Length: 182
Image (cartoon, rainbow, N blue to C red; front, side):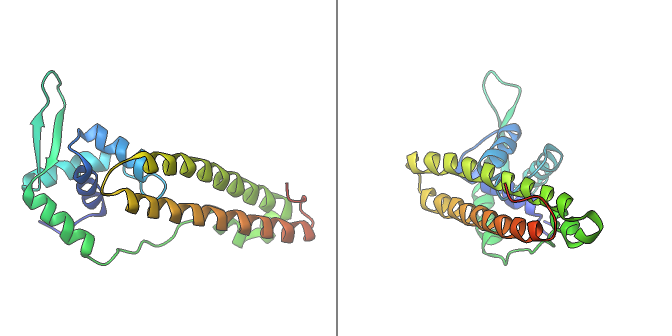
């Protein structure tokens, strides 16, 4: 198999929790990994095809359904372990809000404050979604539960850090002539 993609790693990992259709894999990635990972249908279905061709995933037609349920083969589980043990592939950050803030002298303090207020609002929404995720993970009796909770905790810490940064930045912007933090 060629150099593994991060999409293939995500799909193998999702299927390690339970067998599912391609659609269900996409939904699981969105709902369960969405705070730190995203994949599109256009990425998932070709990855499933490559994984099937490599013998890492098998598709079984579900009774009464036109959709195939995919599950890991023993070789797929071994490959997942190999991939998870590889060093993390760093991705260059892309943050449009920080790019705009970096050139804030062009926008002015008021426009920058709006950007920061939006980032603050999104961090508050993230904390609310993570609270739901925490309650859901705490209710599960699954071997992955402690790891799910560690991941939720990382998201909570990041969102709280964003809130603290936003408050500090709004204060600095108000001293530059922007609106007061609110």
